[in-house]
Length: 147
Image (cartoon, rainbow, N blue to C red):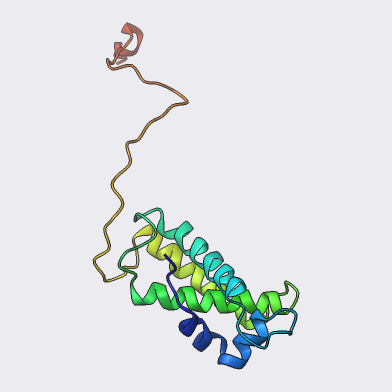
């Protein structure tokens, strides 16, 4: 389930003409290439989920409006990057940095999504690298008092 829609990405990128330009890579159809658009949205959602996964089961359902808008903006940046042969535009780089900081705050629990998405259940902590004994042993040497 994608967080954003074609209409949302169209608004984020600046209109239908820019969306067609960014998705119609060979310029032959003169229409939105839905495969390219879906890939851009999928990339955006994967990045968002990589942050949200720490706090919630992903994909989120229902999708908070702020996450849907973030997905559309990120997808638009992905399309512009593809349009400019992989080069990020300066404004897009700045916006991405701000979005990553915001997502980090959400992942740490410092920023709330203000919606009722189901939180991720607490994971059992397992230290597989170093198993612990169930009883505690104290050596006699450590019980000596100096004084």
